[in-house]
Image 1 (cartoon, rainbow, N blue to C red):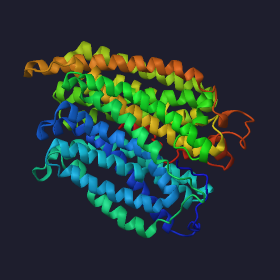
Image 2 (image 1 turned 60 degrees about the horizontal axis):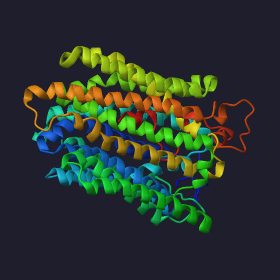
Image 3 (image 1 turned 90 degrees about the horizontal axis):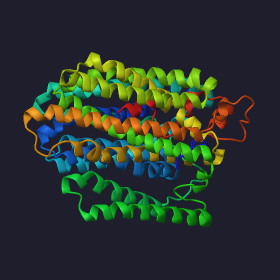
Image 4 (image 1 turned 180 degrees about the vertical axis):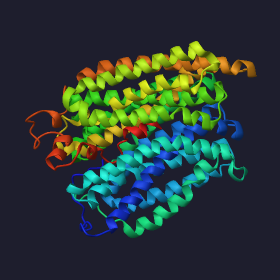
Length: 524
């Protein structure tokens, strides 16, 4: 796991060294590129399906494959950065991400595009965990407030601009390339980042990094593939027996993973997953919340895009502009929740967010049923704003709540596990789209049937999302009433990561650890 608490082995740039600001610009640009790539693809999915001739299951794998590779590789990427150097792994990651983007852009068939997206997710898993590790190794504590303020602005810009940029590039059809520029735009940015990063980023690594648990990585990846592949392809293949056997077998693999990690932890203290963390009630509940929340987001964002463009027949630009109120509401509510609401109301803010998000989903279902295929962007705006507010109230303070009871020495492991589970949930949600969305659509639709069938499937899928948010509300009762850093008189020397960073004088925004997605990143 990646940890930001260990000092770098090399001397960081001094306060008067301007190189550190060049390094900041480079790693922030890489984070921006990763975020935009996720959101930009979502808006172009219908165009990819029509122009590339991709099946519905291939469309799912264009998004789920990236999420799965990213989830499976995050832990490995963070650990490799600690062992071999964060600058080195960052350069490998951004170089591989750029190459994978080129392969996506020049894909000759859907199969090549899916494979290239999986490679892209794996390279992002090497690149993203190093970003904030490099920031922590490069900047002293008193400067990190300014740095993370800039980071938050970049993330917010990426969340809003990604769908719009994807819509514009698809609409413009540059050089007759259709959807391909949404990937090819990464090439000049990636090459510049690779060249400048090799010059301006200072190398750092953990002084006593643990060894990489290859068996643990293999078991996690195998278990996820055995679960997600038949879930995604099952409907298309008629739910064969081997699919049910594979999904049941994934539980056996995950059980073997737990047993192996327990033995490895007792033997050499370097497991992939620190199982002792699950004895902390708030962490165990928080992991469950992250998993289920990821499932809800994975379902919603894919079916939302398909509903607007396939069901309603909107252009990518029309759909991209429709999502702007949602993104702005998430960013605004996230800032208020961390700075104003959580210090005063604690856990109730997250629970209010779950109920608000569920209310927005139900309002969206009602409006979709009432206005039918004649629904407009202005009519969608109210439920989207309500949903955005609910999401913002959850995603920003959730990490602090989950980590508040985690011992300081396991903060890095806990942070990496939270983000990995979140991405697993997202991949699982994308797989479940085959059941809750495509399962409602007829196999052979006439043009006159497409709109009504997609609208019905959209409403059905959103019903599942609302039910999931109700489950999340109940799970949140196991979270601490107030994160440790917001408890008056809390012992900052003894507890979790939030307390540790408060003692160091770092602002709340600085508590996002390497690889941990922000509120705005979740919008993608």
